[in-house]
Amino acid sequence: MATFDKNKILRFIKVFWGESINPKRDWVILLIAFVFLIICFAILNFRIYKVTSSRELFIDISKEEIVVDKVKTEEMKSAVSKFEERQMQFNSLKPVRLIDPSI
Image (cartoon, rainbow, N blue to C red):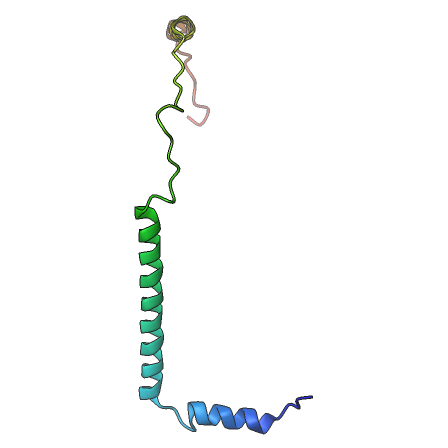
């Protein structure tokens, strides 16, 4: 069974990070992390590009499967006439004069 040794952990931290603040080491670590992230994103974007350019992502529908229904002109004309009738009824109404109570 492994025992918890605080001194070993502190010694590892001191070896890795050092005793004092070192800006050069910190900038190198940040630069390496940044380059690593850029490489990861480039690989991811290249993979997405390859998948989309190979058209594996899109569904392909053949022309034989597409069936277009014809528009029912009688129903369309009746709907248009209903809307025209409603417009005429709306236009025939007299505008109601509202009195502003705040005046």
